[in-house]
Image 1 (cartoon, rainbow, N blue to C red):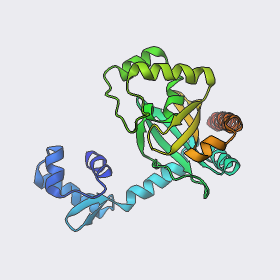
Image 2: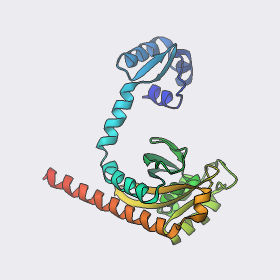
Image 3: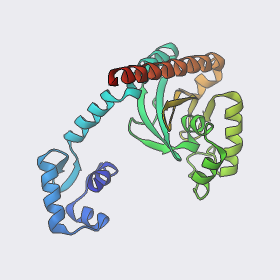
Length: 248
């Protein structure tokens, strides 16, 4: 698993020596592991460099199809994209990061840097701020007590105190905004989707270029976001009821 995690964040591939050095593993046993993983297609050998193999993609696709949350989310994410002609995304929160689980890119929408499966810092995204606004104060304090806030643009939040002030606004408005805070030229709107599962908070967002942000009727987009969020929660409740009934 350590090898797979390492390969995942090094798409250019790693040599046997690099893997041994980074994971502090002996060459002989590591070579045997890598050979077995290559044979089973969990890794592929490109020259002398090991990369993620096709079997991982297959497993990921299976997991994606079987996730109850995604089954509840994707129809409404597609609806939201068709209604707005913009890129829509869904993510969940893990401490100080958002994990992107689904993305619908409209032909007319702006290209955004996020990818399904990617992690991004919550403080620099509308999705992240929407979800953070639901957390208790003590949880926020614990998660951000020692965090060094990475700057991506001149608009990125720089401190825990600034984040808390921004989250107060999000709570009051019930939606979050991203004004070029992660990527220059990209603006986002997001609403949280709470209680998807126990201890799982989600959020959906719409992304647009700066020119569209100046012209679009944001109130209508926010209404559509809230409507999609409500439908997702209702879909999850129905899934949970069906699962409980089948167990009985």
